[in-house]
Amino acid sequence: MALPAEPSPAAPLPSVPPDVTVSPVRSGADKLAFIRMAYSIYQGDPNWVPPLEMERKDFLDPKKNPFFEFGEVELFLARRGSQVVGRIAAVKDPHYNDFHGTNEGFFGLFECINDAGVARALFDAASEWLRSKGFVKVLGPMNFSTNHECGLLVDGFGKPPAIMTTYNPPYYAALIEANGFTKAKDLWSFELSASVSAPEKVARIAEKIRQREGVTVRSVDLKRFEAEVSLIKGIYNAAWEKNWGFVPMTEREFDHLARDLKQIVEPRLLLIAEVKGEPVAFSMTIPDANHAIKAAGGRLTTFGLPIGLTKMLLASKKIRRLRLITLGIKEGYRRRGLDAILYLDTLRTARELGYEGGEISWTLEDNHLVNRAIESMGGQRSKTHRIYERSL
Image (cartoon, rainbow, N blue to C red; front, side, top):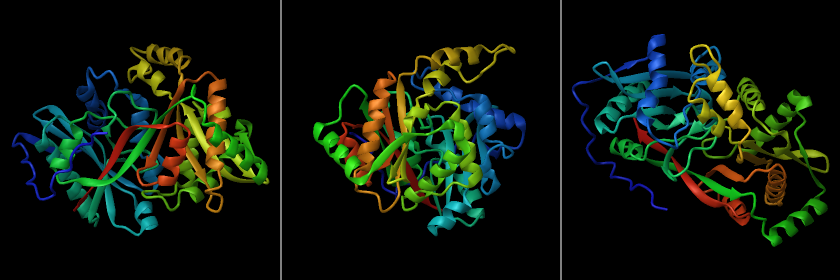
């Protein structure tokens, strides 16, 4: 796969155009302009999925997004005259720095016209805010952490984004790299068809492990929603605690995300693996609701009529793709074949439910154990998202 070349960090930064100004978002009108700015960037792009405006308002609302209970976010708009030409968020996540022992801030929600000088104006504003908070490095894109959408798409532009993943024009990598950012980590996505059977050897070994280790796999019981969420929460924070970029979710963050996902999940594809009765692993595969969200065009109502909602509900009946969004195993139970068992059960159930396949995303580029396991099941790398870094 051909990925963008990384320029020398010593290259001079682009100049800020004299007619461009950057200011923080302060009013409701500014926030609406921030949300809607993306429409001018992606107009005519058949792969872009317009986010629901209502959902974006809630995401940026400190009263509705539990991230704001501990994190800080400053939004900026770049304007040329009265025209909005770019946007960016500067993000402070104290939980991330406490967990990793670092002193780093994030940038996210980046959108910009194809002008490296405008991009510099945005990065300068975000960097100044982050420096004022005492940070020495900036990472991004993060919207607002690895528990949300993150990474810049640098390879695999031929398909729409899967649910809860990012999408951007190809030129964004050049804008970011021209402004002194270099690669921190790549995140990989894999494509897997439900019509392709798992290799016979993998299936045979997985079944032997299932019998020998006393492994049982069950679906999440939505009638016991709160208890199941609590159980999964424990596995999640234990399974990913040593991963690059990971930060544990708070109780409120996890519960908030669980309630949002409850609206779209297929419970038969939410699997918990138990070894001799102890829950030790789980996987979450969800219908790729972006197919339905795209049909709404960003709004559920038009002139008071539920036109977008109707289109979204009709499109939701035609969803044939999935996204395996997470698969985690507690330490002490890894390298014992539980991942293969969960992959096999997910693949079999997806086929029975009539799904054609979908995306497994994302994995760290250097998580060789997980990446080899996906490839052994027939997964093929399809996209690369990149996290960048720059000293402040």
